[in-house]
Length: 441
Image (cartoon, rainbow, N blue to C red):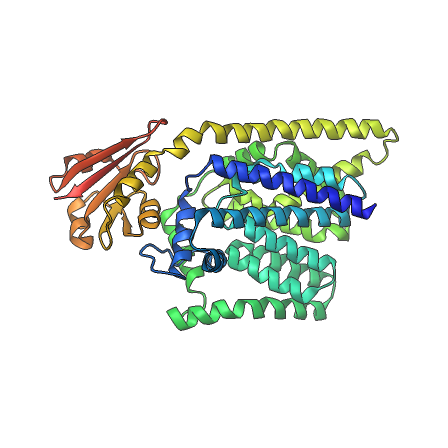
């Protein structure tokens, strides 16, 4: 019987692998931050003229190690992200078996088809790797392997600094349950895993938490606070019914010690992202997604446990599956709608054009600097002022590149009217996005 169930989860994971791989092929263009992590990864195996050292550190080392073995490849990087996603889904399956009594495979399927996974499963972002390490740490807590749980909690933190909320949750849990020895073991594992990062920062920057401080400073300086309503809109648009079921599950399990960690971590995360984070991005929900679904399925199971007619439960599960299917199809449809733009975007056209020039040490000023910096491997700086002469004096650039659709807003008319610049090319895609290339004269 157990072998049969293992066989089914393998089939499910393989089917999801094909789905995520297909979605990746439909969306070849990189998102903003993907360029930054790829540029950082390149810096560890070859010369990279575009890096952002303040980024969360672990992912770039994972990518660099893979590239050391296979050669630099965007596909390899995205394949690694898909594998992280599948590993997260498998861990969710194992954790669900620990918490619930049945329907593990259906619950895992619903979790795997989450709109957030469909959109971010292959993207080179830190959210899913961090979630993987959090889930692995939690699974080890369930298995009473406290020391290893501490190690993987630290890796979650190094994948994404706000993941510190999870080891904080574990610390509160161990203190609450009066387990000082376990707390010591957990802390030892956490500290040992953090030591190389602290040492590297100290030796390189004379500050053990250099990237943590710099990232905080950059985010606080360059991001503006978005309204809480956007956070609520994201919850509605990506979780919908599961947010309601999760709230029900949390209320039902408030006094259940078995759910202490999931409930507390979810609560702390919601408070943090709602109150202390300026940007209310939908992908931030990935950090609590497994626990949202776990408590949602718990709420469903506990409220239907007294229904004797199993056909009714099956019907309800079918309705939930159809409901999620609508969400999933909507997410896939959006991906398909953007395929033409993604495959021949104005940014990609400009990148190919600049690459054909075989530039090596030229400097570019642009409002899409991660794209230009990574793809062409050139020093690229932000259009941070309307004073073009000041930028020319400070950076001595060879080109200015402007996008009217991606990147930060900049009034293109200023570049068109600047006597020191000559419009060399203007690229347009099927979504009416334009990229203009100006040569410094």
